[in-house]
Length: 303
Image (tube, rainbow, N blue to C red):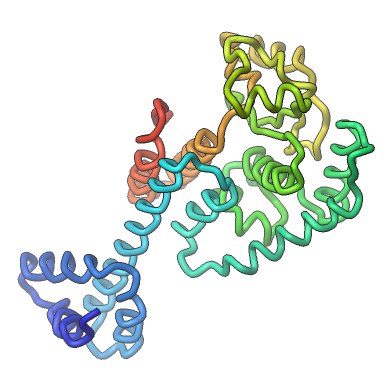
């Protein structure tokens, strides 16, 4: 990185000619995240005026947004194997300076407590009881029913801090811990809600290798779990009744496990809805772009 060249460009940031500023901004942005510390140092000096500071903030935001956009695209293209990594990428959109190590440490504490209580001799239902006890009783996680649509419910770092979330974020927590322990719990992308599916070993292999019948309505699922209601067990018939109540078609995708890319698309949909309700059109536009970056590797669209 050419520090002198960047210093020269920074000195042109407050140029009154908009065309010159746009070219300067484009050039600085091209350096990527490594230029941010230099920009922040200049901003802290506060010797160029409010407009200069605002332009510095805008440039930093553009660089950070581009980084999240590119990272999410690569994550989805590679198959979205690490759900926690994907959720953290989205969290960095709102919290670019978040302490990822701290978030992982909090997650590890929960995982460790579950691991200490669980073993292969337990039945699937008994394992769920362990999960529920550790996550909801010991660590105190709960559904944020008072402020259900708050954007903070969708950022995994704030969920870990506040111990409050929505159905999707609490399910992500559940899935990530289960995956680290080799327990077959996956998400189910139900309309207006999100559930978890517990697969047995045979159907787990069918799901992994893609040989389960996607046209069947949950025949590969032992039972479902509602993370938003402290892990209560849900049966297939209850999903059917729920869909009938909403006058929705009983599509197989409402019963079957979904992949991590689908989960992150749902997460972005939730954030778009939250910020649209709050009246933040710029955030809505940016999140729609992030959605496009992920959905480019699927057949899904923003809804």
